[in-house]
Length: 357
Image 1 (cartoon, one colour):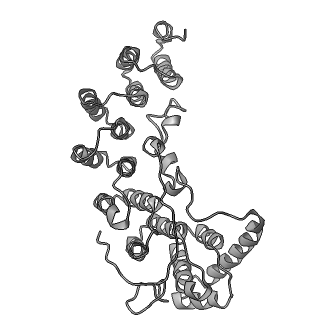
Image 2: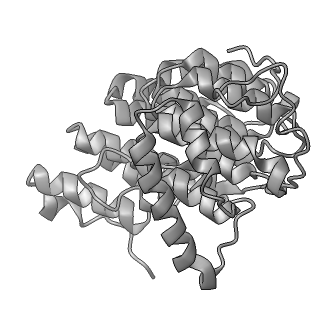
Image 3: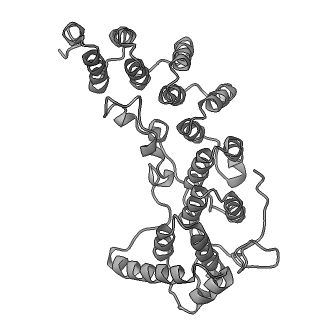
């Protein structure tokens, strides 16, 4: 993907060279940081259901900007929620009636409503049209077009919402146009933007575009942090591009410190994919590396072995955990018990379980 810098948005719904709209954005979006959680999202519920092969990817990546990242720029006013909802419903009804018309006609109809735009209202309307990208994009373009006349400036959260809608509907041409416009505005692209775009590229199996966007982080004023790399790997693995994720991981090992959380993402990817030979191979690579497997590493691999019918191997690995200084937790014990019950070996299998003193 080539992110060319195109000027602002015209009434036709495209970015034109002549228009000067969107020129004076004054959005100040704080940089959002995150900790351990994003790279191990779902680990807390790794074995909440012992029928799962490994942790569920869906929970952490259902919508990136809402997980471990506060919504930037929008602080809902509880007193005005009902009023905003009513206004959003009216706009939704109008857009539904005008949906078959041209973008110019939709913009004219919106202009005649004399709307008092706010961040909450615009976000609410966009959220209501997540499955109708044409209407959502037409409304978004109009909002950007009129911002200079009423003093309202769309913030990062609004841009992220339209990016997510366009990405979900695989409208990557329009998505690139929005990104181009965002790239011209300081502090408009944040970690939430990065997460949404990476997730949508991976979901559409656009691996090259996702990797390229990761390497363009510095151009957008974002740091090449380990957490961003883990987010890329997590998205690729979720959509079954584990081989590409592992190749990228090995290529980047020399540039970043070894981190067991990153290894866990790849291991879990192979396990979720159901490729036990690759999971075993990668486990051996982990053991041979300088990284010490943690409780999540053991849990992921033990669960995969158990669900693949390799309960004897799983039990041996389970019993070796304490020797390696990693005490099994309840979730891992439940996984072993479930596998033993399935094999009808529970009486002889529990006698050597570690017990609290």
